[in-house]
Amino acid sequence: MDIKNLYKEIEAFSKETHGASNFHKDEVYVKGLAKGQYAPLSFLTKKIPEIKEPASLMAHGFVFDSYELTLEDDFQGWYETQFSRKLVLSVAKEIALLHLPNNKDIFAAIEKVHAGYQILRESQILLNGKNLPVQLGEWYAKCIFGLKQEKSTSQRGFDFFIKDKRVEVKIHWADQSSPKGVKIRKSLVELSDYCAVMYIAKNFMIREVCFLDSEFILRKFATKGHTVFLKDSDISQYFFSKSSKHLDKVANSTALLKYAAPNLAMNLAEYFSKDHT
Image (cartoon, rainbow, N blue to C red; front, side, top):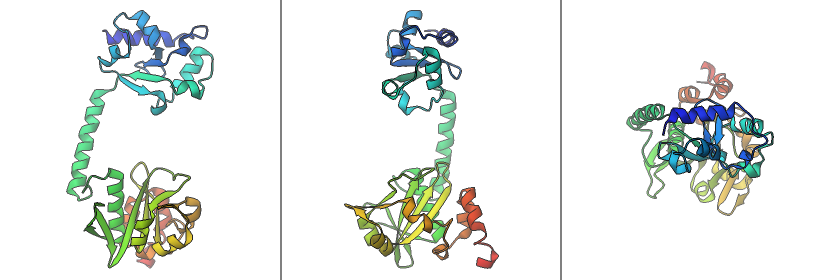
C-alpha cells in the first residue's frame, strides 16, 4: 500500500465538507499527515482497494486508539466542521482513531528515557519496582527532611525515619489534587509519628509539601474504612507555601528550593534566607 497516496486521500477528504453524507456515522477515522486532517475508514476503503478493515492499516504500522484516550484536541473541531453537527459524548465514546506513530522520534525518546533512568539508578533514586514519580518523590522527601531510609521488614520496600521517629511518605503526582483528596492507609498513619505528603507536578517538580503529625491526622480527619482522605480544602492551611509550622523539619532547604516549582520556591525563599538558616 502506498502511504503517500493514503495521506493524499485524507487531505482531499478534509478539504471539503460532507454534511450531506453518512460518514459521520463511522466509528473509525484515520489521521492524516498534517494536523486537523482525518478521513473515515469507510471512505478510504472505497478509494484504496488494499484497505478493507483496520487490520489492513495496522499491518503497515498504524495504531488503533480510542478517541477518548487520545490528545487529539483538533478532532472535535474537524468532525463538527466536516459534518455540520455536534460531536456528542455518546458518539465520541464509540470513535477510534488510526494513526501512524513517528517511530524515529519515539526511538530517540526511548533512548533518552533509558539514559535518564540509568542516571537515576546510579544516583540511588530508583531502587525498587515503584514507578518513577513515587520513587523520585520519596527521594525528594529523604533529601529535604534528612530522612533515614531503611529496608522494610514487610513488602513495602523502605521505611523512613527522623532519628527514631517514623515518617510515612505519601507521593501525589498530578498538577492538581483530586476532589477526594490524597488517600493514605489508616494503618500506615497509625504506625507512624509523622506523615509527609509530597505533591509532585507532572513535570516532576515539587508543587507543594505538607508535613503533619500522625496523631493530628487520626484525630482531625475522618476515615472511610481503612483509608484516610486528606482533602486540599482541609489541609491547605498546613501547606508549606502557607504555613511555617513544620518548616523546622526541613534539614536541607537547598534541596527544597532547588526541586520546588517556581511558585513554591518563591513562597519559601524568604523564610529560608540567611536569617532563618
